Figure 1 (cartoon, rainbow, N blue to C red):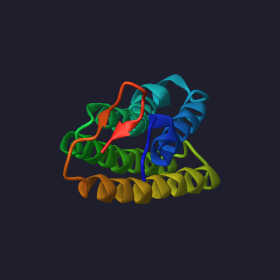
Figure 2 (spheres, rainbow, N blue to C red):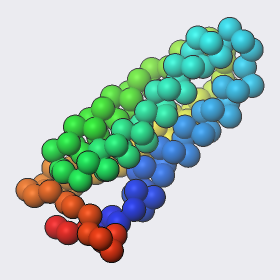
Figure 3 (tube, one colour):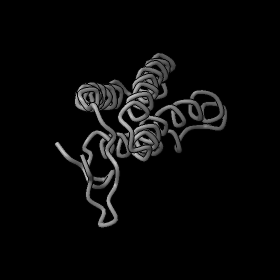
Figure 4 (cartoon, rainbow, N blue to C red):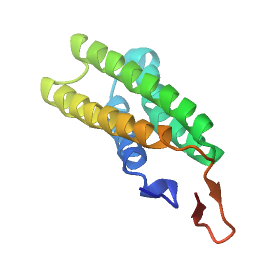
Length: 134
């Protein structure tokens, strides 16, 4: 499992897509809902892919792993706000289930990625041609 670009990392792309989906739900809400739960869930969802990207850019397995732990925390934070959205009637059960299932997939894939980078014993550094040196 080798990745040359962050866009080749499936969990990153899934997290990017999810945050855009959540944005498209929240943007339709009234002012109060946007300013309270809306901002918080958007920030939490954006943080999932942002932390994956930041860790990936560090090119050292320990730092990458730490940022993936932050990302995993953001997955759980996003799930928490999603439950609040459902309880407060801000999303239908169908949208809730769809987004929650997407978060579950991201959570599983993020754990698999953490396991993968956890097995690395040396830094992965970029080469001038853009390939990775293991």
